[in-house]
Image (cartoon, rainbow, N blue to C red; front, side, top):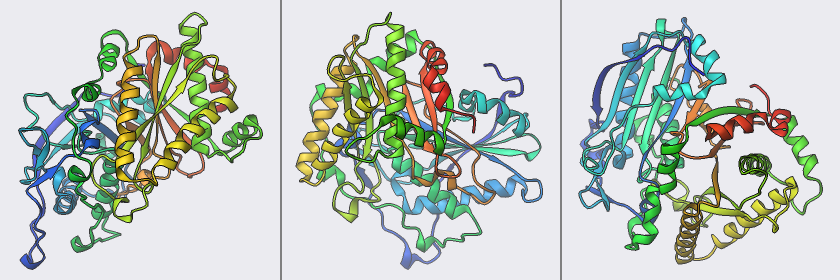
Length: 453
């Protein structure tokens, strides 16, 4: 859908934000000059991944834009003092980050559209949010000079709202790290919270590069630049839509599942529901023929391993768990799909209590399995990532909470799940190829179990 209200975004300025120098040199933090990348960083997709948060602004509480930018820049600088790798650059060997405080790129922008008009359109067409993502020219030739984190703050006409976008290098910063970075930044920025610089302690910097050293297996590394991603870009237009599944609908889904040996979580129910609907879309696309389908589910390892030191670890520390639907082995009933997901995730969780070497082996095994299935053109592939229970809806920089969120770059079939504002329902951002989205939106179950927020 073409926007009738969104005009061109004008870039006003770009500058680098570096860490905040402390006045008391006794309290200066002596950071390492390099940050070693781990196996988990190495197998992450090499790309910048953006998130955009949209904020309505009340005239009575909105300070001058110059004050807003000053507040954001100063708080970002304070945060970078404690999150030093985010201000670094890739080393020439690609195996570590040079931590010489080269800075986060901060972009100021403006759009001549009223926020309320944009919001009305964006609720129906979340792809409009992509206009507010920073444009990053990332390639192999300029990795050593490309910022790991880029921020763009865009003001709407008449100060009616703001779009705050942060794009982070996935090969260094996973979803947990990126969202926690935004949330902690908001707390430092919010004058009502008034966090002193000495009290900022949001990440631990474990020596993952030694604990989980990089691999030299070139076959294993092929997936970081997925050939199927390139295939999508060449042949299919990707689009995104938002769907809301409220608490009452989740209760209905639980009833539809019937009696199982466990009480399904709302995330498990919604992922099973979405995956089943998408498998049906793939079947229609393939003239009624069911094909094998791979669902990749990223699982955050923080909190899964019995070591408190890992709970707030910076960097990539997640597994992509492959869940495989094979026609004839699993029925298309919602209960069967749910049990398949539960069984695979539960077995994976049970392995986390073992040694780090077992986790290393499991990550390698899963990575190879996903790569093998992705390379098979007779297999359908999708992903579901849950951000539920993470307080991204609470990211208040001092002028209120966001009213709309957007994730990712629309690279492949994917579901992003996050909490509704009330916390009991789930918002789904579905990124699908356009022909699949046309069928997905018209699916009778999707129409019955989703609603407008």
